[in-house]
Length: 304
Ligand SMILES: Nc1ncnc2c1ncn2[C@@H]1O[C@H](COP(=O)(O)OP(=O)(O)OP(=O)(O)O)[C@@H](O)[C@H]1O
Ligand SMILES: [Mg+2]
Image: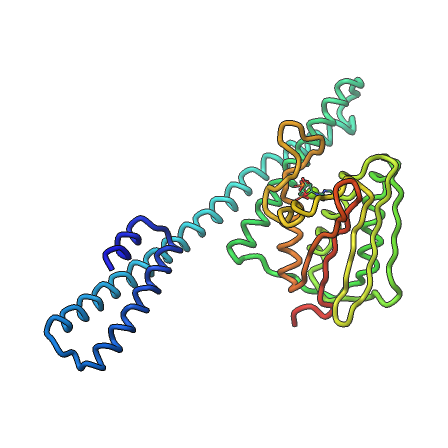
């Protein structure tokens, strides 16, 4: 028992739970033996009461630890959401004013000035999307992210995503194919989030496919589920790395030698959005260099 208490003092929340369970088990055994021998000796009575007291203390500590962890989580979410707000306001001014200047509404600019302004604009937009991603993650973690369900055409959404990414793909001479089965029609889901899932997967497909490659979307219905695949003929992912990808801030390339930009949030957000819909997301890739297929499912009727 001393060991249990000692362990508890050093351990974290998980260890506390484990110790508490061990204590409960040991108490059960004691209760059993106490009943069977009808608390024969005074010493046994004493032991029984001491164990009870210890258990109550541990229970109170467990409740306190749980409350503290909930409060810490809330503080983290509040901090992130306040910071995001504070960062977004000036950032919107940076983006808005550089857009106005870039459009030369208040006087002409030379080429270098326009180039620099474009850099400011692009960096501002990048930072804004990063802040939005972090805010979304904080919201999901604190359980505040809710789905705004509506009925919409999945086919139209996929066709529209195709148009959005087409220009970028063309710039890199990447061929794009869209293959949507006839039965794919209306679904009930959060349209903005589904759009973002598809956009994140398509951005990755373009980013991780060398010039001259191919990417595509394939969609079909399996029973009550829509299954959407975003595939590419790009750099591929080794079997050992495939399970890591959906974690936050995970990028497979070494930071120093990285050729691709990004933060490592796209897939973790996509996974969270898919799971909020009670769908699944996974990756299939034969090996490095053999391209990848990211697949996800969404219930056609959504959560009622
Ligand atoms: N289509 C793909 N082909 C090969 N590797 C991929 C593909 N998609 C994702 N990955 C790997 O998974 C990692 C995580 O992807 P994720 O979208 O989360 O982050 P990112 O694209 O690096 O950054 P962000 O999406 O935040 O801009 C990528 O850095 C890359 O190593
Ligand atoms: Mg990405």
